[in-house]
Amino acid sequence: MQSENGNVRYVVWSELFGWFFLLVRALRLSLQLRKLLIATFGVILTTAGWGAIAVAVSGSADARVAALGDEYGNWPWTMAQEDAHRLSEVPGNPFADGWPSDPLQHAWRTLTEPFRAVFANGPNLRAVVVALLLGFWAIFIWGLFGGAVGRIAAVELATGERYSMGRAFGFARRRWPSYFAAPMMPLSVVFIGTLMMALLGLLMRLQIGMLLAAIAWPIVLLGCAFLVLVLIGLAFGWPLMWSTLSTEGTDAFDAISRAYAYTTQRPLNYLFYVAVASLLGMLGLLLVELFAGGVLWLSLWGVSWGVGSELHDLAVGAADNQVGPLGTAAAFLFAIWTSLVKLIAVGFIYSYLWTAAAAIYLLLRRDVDATELDEAYLEDEPTGEGLAPLVNDEAGVPGIADEDDQDDNHHDNDGSNESRANEPSTQAPGNHSAGEDNDGDSGDDDSGDDGSGDGGSGDTDSGDGAGKQ
Image (cartoon, rainbow, N blue to C red; front, side, top):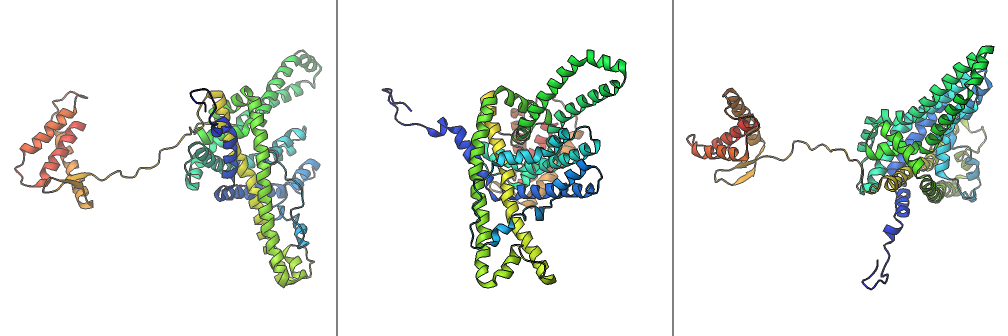
């Protein structure tokens, strides 16, 4: 900030590097336990569904289908067990695996792998169907769990308010069709274009069809250029589609429009934000892996002083098969607990994906639409029955009515409204004003013949009832 004489007195770093602080906040929020748990359950359900599909096609004679079954045949409780042997060398160093991979790139590659396999398998209908089933299952699961994480991140990044898991799942559940439809609409366009080219391919089996296809080939090339643009926008922008739904609370059409607009109008900004977020994510993943590995290593190192090497190998899954039924059951349980710790570490990858995507969406929305970072859609919370009505006691002092008085007041309102409804109305519609309410109140003062304090209250309510009519 500059003083009156033009000298710089101090710099507001939060305004100058607001984008960086927002991405750092995204990293911090992605480490929250509730986001990690949501993402971990999403990983478990995704992997379980993929494993079920893989088992269903494991006996296929088609080599490509069988390859997909082998690739996606790992179950949640075994996917993290492949590197258990590294912990068998206690007190070895479990942190000697080098710098971790980019979590954003890893999550993007994992969730898009089934759809990329569709185009890699060529004209193989069975393999394409299996790959599409794998992809549809991923979108189906993460439309709920990813939508919940993204909703929490969007609200907390924009407003700073805490957003509960229940509200997040309710929000994602109500917009589940939009989360599913947003990436599927561009894929449907590609599918329709592919179907038209397949029909052209059938026509090319004839000589006259070959000639017609050669004449119309420039149109095919133009159509394929459009489809490539659709796929590029989808590949880079599909996380922004879900961030749009989580932030704006709109529909799939608005999500597609914003995702394509932001990635095409500010591509360099987008790539820059993704690069910075990737570096921060690598740092966060390193910390998570250090923590998870430290928990496993310290637990096994501690018990190794009393259990001995043979039973220690059983705990890490490195023992032989001569352990008996109880030892086998114990080894299975040890594998479950070890895999669970590792799965929570894997859950950070997807928690950070949706949280960073929400932060990048807010930044791109500011760059393109000049919208402030603190704006996000907030649904109306249930307000219950509202405030209790005020009543006058015998001395004329207003106070809060108890339940019995509220019930009596409610019945008086119903009765007075019904009586006024049976009377002919002499007022023009829409001309009832506050002054007429005062007249009704003055009428209450004049009608004090009943001798009860509640009678005035009942007449006042009846005056209100006539006003409502």
